[in-house]
Length: 179
Image 1 (cartoon, helix red, strand yellow):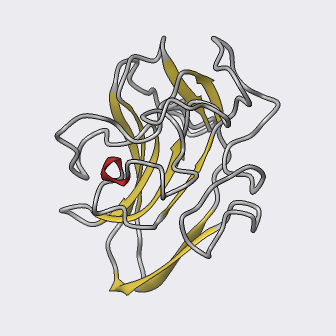
Image 2 (cartoon, helix red, strand yellow):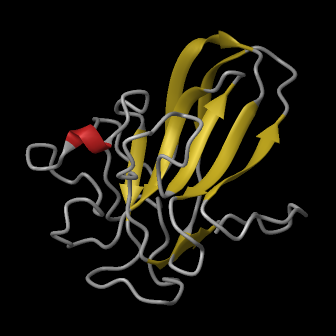
């Protein structure tokens, strides 16, 4: 969860976000990437807090941004489980029935969402179902994560550093994910 194996830094144990910044030494206008994660316990997708700015822990998952102030590139969301009817904790599988007000305006359609548990969340790491691997992964756009989880975003030319934040709105003892 908020850990990057082999990166050599310690991540906070409480709710909020921890980050790593990737320096950029060239101009870019396309950003693409892939991440693999493993869910621990009760992640619940987009936070229900009334204050959800790009600087907050607006998601249980990864927030990928660039620049200062932050500009959104992509969000990799972790939902509670694949079949939950608890609409506030699930991935937005059906935008006709999902409360889209939970998706912050700055995210738009630039996200993937997946859960590591099929039916019930458990106090263990869901090694059997990697997150954002293109299987049982949801995207609200035609660009689906069925391309093995790769995301792609075209933006105005930039030279700004890219930041990846590991975020959760509750303590790690209740929800976490490992990348």
